[in-house]
Length: 457
Image (spheres, rainbow, N blue to C red):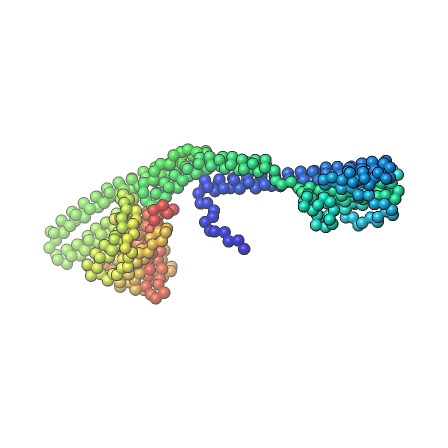
């Protein structure tokens, strides 16, 4: 059983196109070569057989015209190289059993004989070299092909046995090999040229799309190459421009809304100072605090991603900083992190996402346990708690804006309902994801997956 390595097939489009083209040229040339050689071998063998049969009849006719005492010497003289002639005198030798090929050859021999000899016994035997006894030429000098033995009449009481040592089939001609290699090289060069025209724009498009998936500013893709590739690049550039214009308009609108909302809230706070009723003052102050907190949360979630420049940080140090800050506030949090985890991201957004997950774990699950794992493709920030977990039917719903499983609707017990919405927006803005699952031993596990640079899709 042959075990192929898993990574034997090239991953890039250009390399795959070259390999497929070279393999197609190689196999097609091999098939043509085999077909050509089989046909040539059949034609060559047929021509050799016709020559052998004609020579056997010619020598038989020649010996029949000679004096009886000279025939043996003449047969010995005619024997040379692959041709061997021997005369048998006396009672004709009984014909040996022949197969279909040998019977057809014997019929051809009989058709070449004079009319008065066509009713005489004719025998043709084709044997492998190992089945032939020690006949001259010596075994060392014999050709390696089959041996044809023809027995036919000369005169009454005399038969001639002619033995011919067929030459071995010729090997694959050098010209065919050279032409196959030349065709494969030419096909590979042509495939490399086409692959470069197709694969380079696609690679640039994939890189730009990956950057956009990570939340960065997608660079424009050169509109070059075949028509289909140019159309794809043009459509991507148009889509990117439209998305950037939409995002910029959204940021400007949110900035204006935030400013307009903060102004009346500030005015209301000033007016509260003139209210002398302490109970009413406290109730209105609490409502204003909730309104301001909700406003800031909505703006933060709406701005979500994209406003900050990407930069390389140590993800482990960032998570440790968040955990340390919460620990200083006497929050029950523990962490287990690697020594270093370099990562290209928008650090403030990642910090906000990690903090939201940890604060959720503390609020609903008593304490938070934070881990950072890494693989070749991504980092995973894992936050576990010891709470009741979340029912499977609610795990998708909790990511929707303003959804809170705690039904009191109080910000003191249930927050604004935008924490996980913001986490998901930040994760997707970095090409990642967020997943929730209940632990077998109790509690909830939140996994924030952040693809490494170059692996976002």
